[in-house]
Length: 308
View: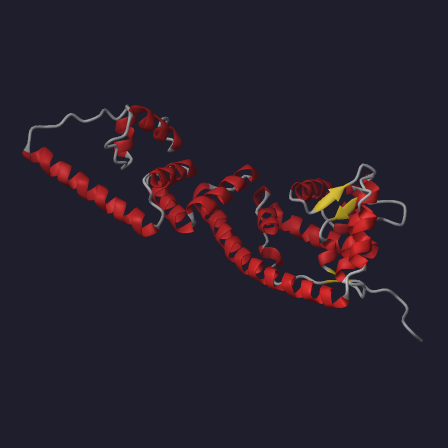
């Protein structure tokens, strides 16, 4: 007897958990992020039957209470997970309660073509939102007229682009994951509001310089803001590499030693009181030579030294 049942399956790439969204998700809420990723995969699988739409049946969508039973996690955890999914652009919740798992079409294994499936799914979401534009039929018509040869060439180009993007993204995601772990090991749990700051620092300064700045902050028992102050100071001085940062430190130490030797040989030089901005910076190991009072005031604030 022939098996006429429909079977659905998911196809996940090996770097699925290395995406920015999954890295951020799994590091959320003091460890609950791992539970969120478990819930996300279960919801992906649940939505396959309706091609990405979470439904209890043809007419009734799931609510958090129902999903709690399905995924076997407390309602509160499910509600927080759904909010995180929405914030990260992983799901979209309609006014009628219907939940769409975005990007699910990249994971569904079916016999229809990739482009047709994605096009149909996006159209379904837009119809439910009431945002289907008059241009949609034209786009569909143009796509349908594409020749197999043209589609094959486009697919080849897209594959090459995706391979390059995947290679770059894997390296970036790996650095970002390391930075999160570095922060948590030295300063505590990363709050969601800090993710954008960490990502911006990684793009602006690079992982090597951040690690060096964090080492100096930890050595002086300071918070991450102190490390950011060091990074900004390096940036103003044109320091872009770890070698330059270390060379600057050696130069500063040598200059300090020379000043100390001169101090011992000559009459005492007036020292800035520790409660002043210049005194705080000197104590923190910052060379204040040539800096204006405003520059010292700003840098003290950035490094969190005013209350130290």
